[in-house]
Image 1 (cartoon, rainbow, N blue to C red):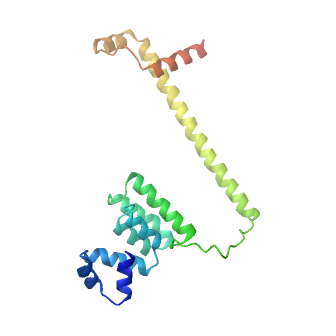
Image 2 (image 1 turned 135 degrees about the horizontal axis):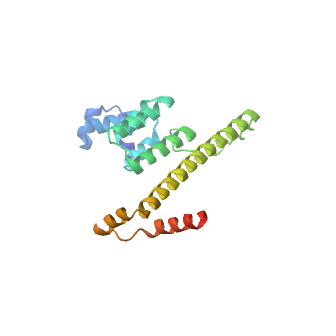
Image 3 (image 1 turned 180 degrees about the horizontal axis):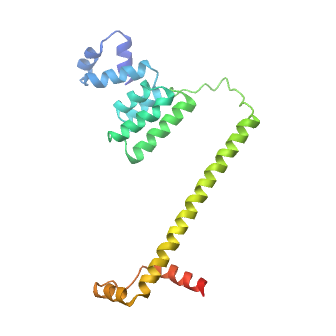
Length: 189
């Protein structure tokens, strides 16, 4: 990829580079565009097969606030799924934090800015909000589990239902369910 950039820097056109390297013009054009934009991180991700060229170009062309839309578009087009989508998000986040290039300037380190009280308060409030959401989800899951457990207990108390289960060959229950029913029965006594 760096050779393609060097050839472009020496004045060769995209079609010439494609002809000389035996690569498609689209591939060469994409590499040249990413190099021109200084997108070393995206180039490396494409080179290692972490994200497709089309997605890298969309990310490179997008403004910071439009990158999420580019990732969503790639997901909808089935270009990024599962682990690749998570990896692309991580690449975008690192790119946002550390920049487009892979080189780090270690000679001039800047001191981290002190955190303002407003920023600290906002971070604390965000954390509290996240934990409240988790608590609500856990309570909802517990309520659903209790409902299902109680429904199964009532069904198992019905002789007709257990007769149908036995006729169909469902004579036993999963161990976890039996343990849960016995535990709840022990608490209710």
